[in-house]
Image (cartoon, rainbow over all chains, first blue to last red; front, side, top):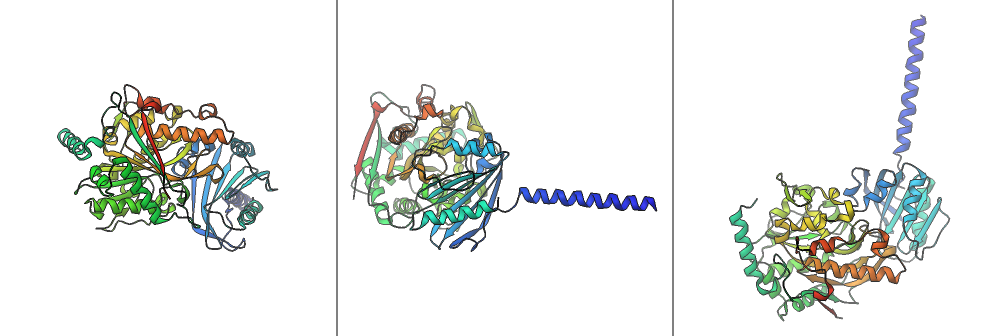
Length: 164
Length: 329
């Protein structure tokens, strides 16, 4: 009887541990990309590509070292379209620490950037926006300029930041 | 792979085709001869949309090629680069997406001229390392027989036998080895390691282990890679799309660090082209108040290595570069 009770407790503990592990794993790989229609005007492309420190060069050959040296865990990228014509790419870099995200962010010269209130720090340019929040660094790059583009980039960025 | 006889035969045949126009495709920089580099710009190249004006791009290409080869006939330059029956491939640098990749319009114009010079459409391959990169640059993948083919090395694969020169041991893309002539279509960008990526650095996209060649600001790797006989000899001409260029943050596309050059840069001397490219990026960085590439820790030492007595891939001496700059439109 006692033996059976002990076994049940062990089974329950194992199940709980497994659940916690799965949730933690899900947390690490949670989808930070807003789906189509979640942000007004923005549609997400079908594919999301992911890379780790050993494969990032396949995405940005020659540019990967900067992220890897700052403690890259993973990178994910997806295409977006705004109102059917503005094409953009969202890159989300997950670093080991917030300091790593800050290091990459601050390596870029700010030039004439605007600094909107977004995440821990953000820079907004014509056709691009970069921000960091905790261990995440996000780049949104648009391929052409359209009216209202800054507000559109900010809306998409805020939606991403809210999921972090 | 070629045996030595085939290799020599191709060199001789290639030299005959190129005639006096080919000073640097596989010959050493000689005496007082200067390397010709042509830049032609068209300030009306852009349209309100993401793609440039197709007709203006075609006219820009013709003007640049005719200036370089000193001819009034727009097909004649291509007859000096290729001959009927050859497989001709266009190695793009498409990894930055359509905003910083050779345009579809430019590639279409080149393919049209190649066909007019006697190359069958089915013998033309447009490629880069990754098929996705081509798609992101606006190209539709295709391997239909009888038509110009578009695909990446990730689908075509790499040779099993390694080749080497100096510090570089690598495997070449099958598309590359199966091409008789390779036209190099880079874009002008700063590079977080090498300082500049243009003609010579674009050859990282023809091998299976580019990430192994990034140490020491890519030096001597870039020069050594370009010394591999197949790369040195098959890559006969550079046609760089400079509609947009990146002065910081490259090789990725960074709109905030880009400028509109709205032109093409062409030539045979890959070192001269990269030297002019480095100067352009340095000028733009100075204009923006940024550090020089050397101060930033991304020196372009590979240029001197490529020009040194061991490599002799071309010249990095501005005094030995005949730069011709023109504007149309």
